[in-house]
Image (cartoon, rainbow over all chains, first blue to last red; front, side, top):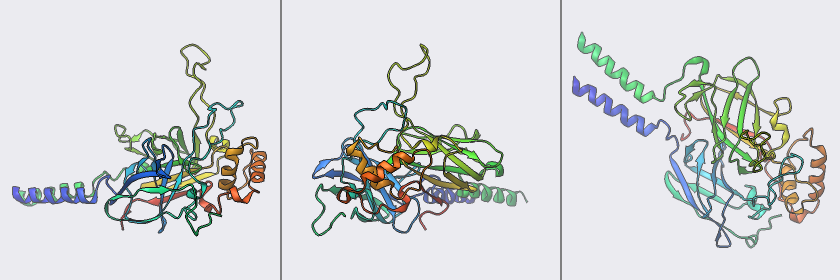
Length: 147
Length: 215
């Protein structure tokens, strides 16, 4: 009897771990963001699922690295993603004179990386760990007119 | 007889573990978490507030440095950051995000400093002007708030081209009409403008039930 209860317990614990209280996503993505080979020191990477659903985001760290999160959880569902990168400099003047909203700082990365229609960054995220380095260039890739 | 009872108890305990993560009690049966972005960049501070359209409690969430938030109403597991629960229903959402306060700007000595300038469009600050509405369903859900940032002024060349590209799809916005005109004027130099930003970029939001994200 005791043994049976133990087996139930072990089984359910396994299910809980597999199904996940919290660990709801089956893939993780991390990597490095560079512009012409130099790490981008700030900004945001966004993973837009081509199948719809909420986007997953990652802040870019000072060394250019990023790790994707969905809401409060680490990771994202496996699948196909279009990726955008938005990075602005911190505005030199942090105080606006009249309390009006502050405009964003100058863009660090080329603006075509801001839209999934023009970024040209498309990746298949597989279950488990994925390392995706985003190698941006200040010149649009050959044969592609950003306009 | 006793064996059967024990057996059932084991099964029940197992079920609790499997279903787990406490299905919340009915009245506050929703858990809301999400992400806040400003013109595509993650917010790093601030507060989101969900105002119930009908009677009910405000739900408030602090924006964490990674841009995420979780709503709290004082219900649910208050020891856990993400343990707060919310009553399902319709909400108007306001967001307050300000820059760092000017050093030494407090009105009285020892008092709180005056908050820095707004980092998002002013309309999100009040529920009368905010155009963000969301329906909260029972269960776990993710609500992403994609906000428009502050509009660029015409004198600021560097940022106006970006702002113009990003805001072309945003609906007209009472209270900042002059700024928008300026931003759109800046957009007439096509080479500098980001092409066709997706319609969602402006100020929409995405919701999805998290029940089964992998399937």
